[in-house]
Amino acid sequence: MEITWPFKYLLVVALLTTTAADLAQSQESGVKDAAARGANEIMQTNQKKFGLVIHGGAGIIERGGTSAGREQEYRAGLDHALGAGYAILKGGGSSLDATEAAVRVLEDDPHFNAGKGAVNLARLVMEKSGHVMMDGEGAEAFAAANGVELVDQKYFYTEERWQALQKMKEAEKRGGVGGKKFIITDQDRHGTVGAVALDKNGNLAAATSTGGTTNKKAGRVGDSPIIGGGTYANNATCAVSATGDGEYFIRSVVAHDISALMEYRGMKLPEAAQTVLDKVAKLGGTGGLIAIDHDGNIALPFNTSGMYRGHVGVDGEFVVEIYR
Image 1 (cartoon, helix red, strand yellow):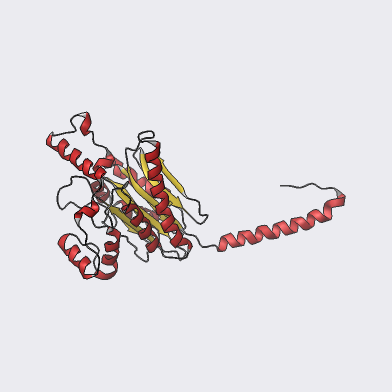
Image 2 (cartoon, one colour; image 1 turned 60 degrees about the horizontal axis):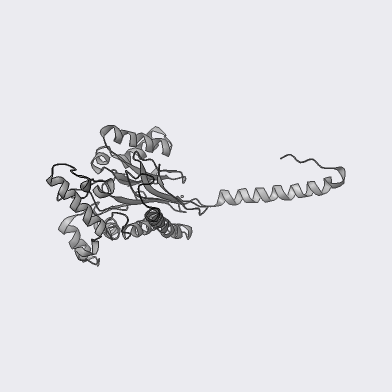
């Protein structure tokens, strides 16, 4: 399991015709309507923007490739995560708390491949260690010293991920995919979850968590905990959480590059996000990302057939999508 990092730098969302008889009444009604519209516009202008975007991984996720019941379970998980983060933002809570809450839900949902509880420790690393990243025995010692419960490895067990590991090991022994029994899917290989948010105070935050690449080599670190790679937030620009082939996202410095294009080139968020993801694709990497800027605009590009994703804003409308 890779330690994840919810990161917030810089604290870091008609023309009417009438008869002469009813003219006076219409004019009076028009004045009232205009006043009502004006008051509504002022209220909308004064309403503080906020928003939340989440993802549960990108990959070869084909429409019709899973049962209707299974698909509904994925959608329910995303909906639950949106609800957890939205409740915090709507109540005036911080973007940091909202992203952590959303990712916690996805971490604990067996449908998504992410390390349970990792965000909890990552936040302590950010707020109490003075460091950006810790791993291995040192991270465990830090967790214990700060009262984080250490659990048995069985806590992280799910049958689906165990079977994926066995398939990967068998394919490795055979020097390739082999027979039909050992067809390897993107869900078998890797999985990541993430959230980005803008709160009512104008602060942006991002959180990313992953179970890592299945059957990865010991010590391998992906892009999720790399600030500027798979995770980044900057109040002047945007917050980003990525998912996909981590090595390519690290090499492309994806999350920070999006922010840099906005800050130095004046690009809008959607254009910047797509430009950087295209760069990843040129290197041979697949995946996607979610992002939100300081005005509450969002972007959810991906270059795979699907990405588990969802978003919600001030209007409270939950949008959950899976396929392209």
